[in-house]
Image (cartoon, rainbow, N blue to C red; front, top):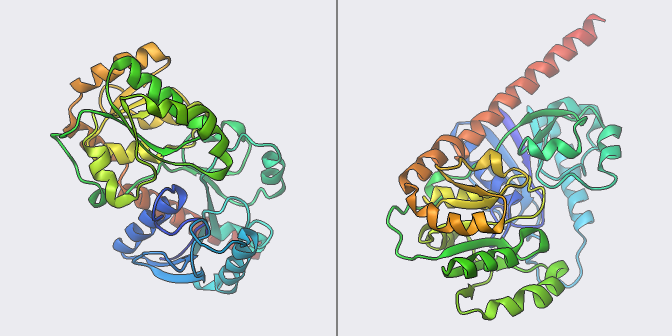
Length: 354
């Protein structure tokens, strides 16, 4: 099958440091190539991929040192190139929210759009109602709650390349890990409180976006002086197996409708269990008593820090391999691609018969 993957241009594919959507696109694209499909990736020129790369921007936007740049112009240029070559592909798979909707209306049936972000935002319901012919994929069932009437085609949980994460059955360290982004909805303050009350060291590897800088300075930085807390900053893929694999557990104390939470399965890939708040997709990802523990309040979280030591790390890794590998994700998407092709051909035949 000939497949186009259309990635956002904000981060490299995969990202050099923090980044979710582009990392998923990278793992999916390579897994599809490994399965024998002809895949073309539309992305920035610093992508690393086994697919054919069409670079529509030299460098991903976030780490581009240019003082002035336009994300809208960059994405419109990419869409122009995808549109120009659209007839080369059986399926066009978009990962850029709804930006392509006005441009590909006449071939919406040949597209698949995976929505990677939160959907409880004003204006989205009108937008998805305006373009109902685009088949949409959610990354968790919970993600759909804000848009129950959208044109949902399937739910596909994320996956990552199993070989990229080292399983560690005997961690050297005994600390809690926080990995991701410093922002109010990710609740780094809650992670620090859990560690402090449990009396267990916390290592934090996280980036701070400009929009969250004030929150970091006012709410989080003062907490980093606690002797149990070590703030590392942003890390890349090459450091994750070491960072996650030697932790007692990953803390995922979120306070928002998390669409998926890629870091949870990255921890599982290393054999590290997850302690997560019952929000968003968490109940779909964490298997309590197997891959981690789900909590509802601070007291439960502190108890979980001690109870999680009873979980077998080999079972955590085995559960990851069963559910959350890039290959499992790719196989599910291939089923959807073939379904799209069949549906499109059926619609064409019905139209000719009429």
